Image 1 (cartoon, helix red, strand yellow):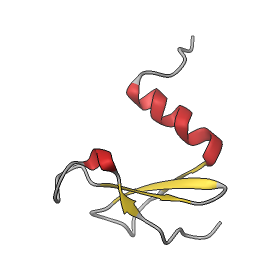
Image 2 (cartoon, rainbow, N blue to C red):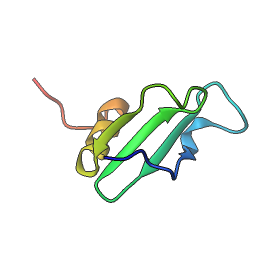
Image 3 (cartoon, rainbow, N blue to C red):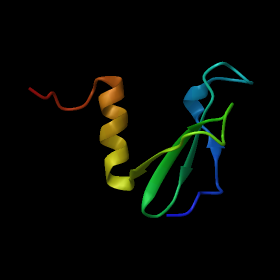
Image 4 (cartoon, helix red, strand yellow):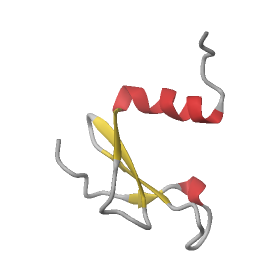
Length: 66
């Protein structure tokens, strides 16, 4: 899996150069996220089908688990 080259700032990062800058890149088979302040560091990459459940879990809106 190559490094995506279509990075864009998340709409949830806030205006300007706020402290919460998250970038997202999409590809046919996966979605990647990274911290825009340190783009050369770690990137999280998910299969496309796993990304929405991941975000829902972060928001606390996903299915509950025992």
